[in-house]
Length: 160
Image 1 (tube, rainbow, N blue to C red):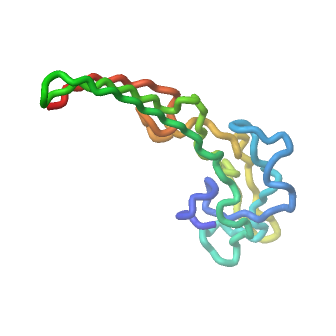
Image 2 (image 1 turned 30 degrees about the horizontal axis):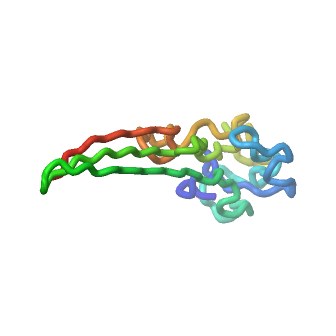
């Protein structure tokens, strides 16, 4: 992996170990991905993007949970005069109050040591790898709409 891919926290594309990527006790937002399914390329020399040390993990191996949000809106117009009307409107965002979690922590290593001589590369595993720490709304500081908890908005409008 290269720095610009942003797949893991470190500028190194890891190898797969053959273990399943998802844990058997899979549940969002906790412990969804198996740290043991990944390892640093043994010949990694500490040079990010060096083609001889790029591992075999594919793109998008770790994915965030799906996004589900149902919004509802209703309005009623009341005539005031021939050209003016009063409109009452109600909007409900995320009417089912479904939590929409953000992306999992993709930094498999907190720190690593590059291979040198007969010493292989080492990786200090991040204990939060594969966990989700926040919802989508918390990630991008949304106040209304996308990924927030249920919200209700009422409006009264004079249209002329």
